[in-house]
Image (cartoon, rainbow, N blue to C red):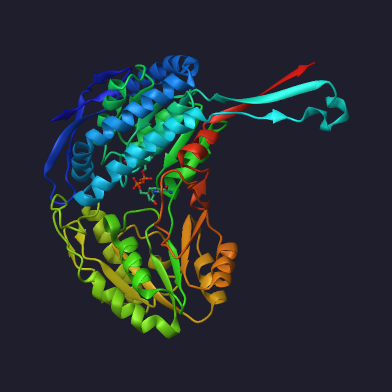
Length: 472
Ligand code: NAP
């Protein structure tokens, strides 16, 4: 099946077609068309024209489109789940959850359109403000370039597109080259729900050429990017005066204290380490377990990990399927070997079959190993010892990243001391760092990025407060 781009509401092909493959076995999923430079220019021009239309639409009209899209996406959840699983290799049961979450992200965006408001400014708090009243209104920015990664191809796209449209912007979306199909299906769905032509354009092609041409176009007002820190930093350097939000990587850490509920901690940490083969930006990658319970935690963790079913992503019972490419699986296997060569022990897993890697547990990973200090983005977790809370917090903070982290403890003071001292964008008590609901503020510190997503917070990033002042 062919999946043309969407420019100015039309299905558009080009002379550069490419086959999208199922990462698990390389089988063909569909044909897509990569933009040529002239088509990028047309996409931005079409968005610029539509931005005027979007800006004039009432909040009620924008919210109605997004609410219709929420209902339609729920109706088509199975079709979207199949597309997500096919292009990304995500196990079908996780792809279904992503489709359902994506619908909710549209609903939250619709609701936030109703809440788009400014504030009254207390002008006469200054002597010179006497007799003046003022208010702010939030205005859309214009055309937003949305660049998205492969790991949540639908929901992370909607986290940009939903709030952008709710706020009255137009969008040019460049999805990851590996996972462009759900983006096209989403654009079709929004058009069916009454979105003006050109308000959402989807172009495909390599990030280094087509993506870069898009973000450097003079008519782009904002770049909203989710992906790797390397590309994110590069885009920030290119951005000039454009507004930029960056949702980047992490090496998610969780602390397990001796008074933790071990049943819950083990089950949640296993889930958080291996969902989508660890290709989740808030995946559990580093676990710091207090020495007194380390043996018991490890035994239970390994036993549960070994029960996970590795297999084809379309099978309902599959827990772990392939990584996005064989090269990525080789890289992660190489990082496990590097950790073992530097003193760690591989307790289970780590066997590679093409792009698939069995879930691995590595213990006592040196802080200098890549498996500790970089983002693994694979089905592997390091379980490490610690003695005190201070030591555990220091090791969690010993990271270039700071997206989310967590602690398991029944002691409220311990929990809140950790919450206060761990330097991250979100901290979870008795929950894994991989926990996210789509309306919460979400984003990182340090190399994990700048800005926040979650429709309410993304809308703040995607609008400009304009002051209107009058003398009474
Ligand atoms: P990536 O390689 O950085 O790619 C992300 C997107 O950027 C893709 O659409 C890519 O296009 C595009 N791109 C690459 N180079 C570009 C350039 N020079 N100019 C413009 N666009 C460019 O990331 P990925 O491998 O898809 O995703 C994995 C990363 O995303 C991990 O680091 C993960 O932590 C991060 N992530 C973060 C969050 C978060 O919310 N913080 C969520 C999910 C994922 P091509 O595909 O064509 O290269």
